[in-house]
Amino acid sequence: MEAKSQQHLCNSPPPPLYRISWKVCNFCMAFFFALAAYVQINDPDAGIWIVAYVIPAALAFLVGLNPPITEHFIWKSLSELHMYMCSMVAILWGWRLHRAAKSSIFQEEEGREFLGLVIIVIWILLCRHSGKYLGGYRLSIAVLITVLPFITWLYYYINKELRASWPDHCRNTI
Image (cartoon, rainbow, N blue to C red; front, top):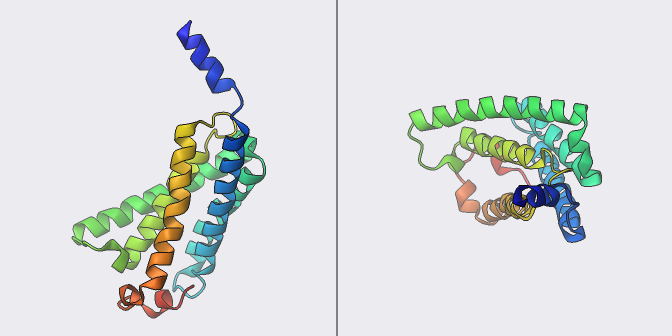
């Protein structure tokens, strides 16, 4: 009997505040990913990173418009392919950073790229099946993940001495 009531809870539509909050989080993350793509313009390998950020920006924007789109074959295929590719590059960058024994990964370009890829993967994982199942746990993580990149970006923007050792193409971003 209890399993049946839990199944009913999973299939019931989320409260309106959850739906609105989820949409806002997706629009914010779409903006963040678009902004991340924009600041890649002066990067030596800009093309790769612009595409890496534009795809999750578009996916998050679509989820913000219509959360059930996560069940559509094209959305699922594109998101999974992108998530797997980002995961592979993040593993490679993480391994390189680990082998080089880097302690401050924000000071390394590969470290910033690694963290960007991790955010992409986490966001795509959060979006999967969110059109069907949106609970408080997923929404809480989404709010946290939405806020942290903006706070980090603002922190590094305000603390210019932290950016002093970065390459020119990184220091001159937004």
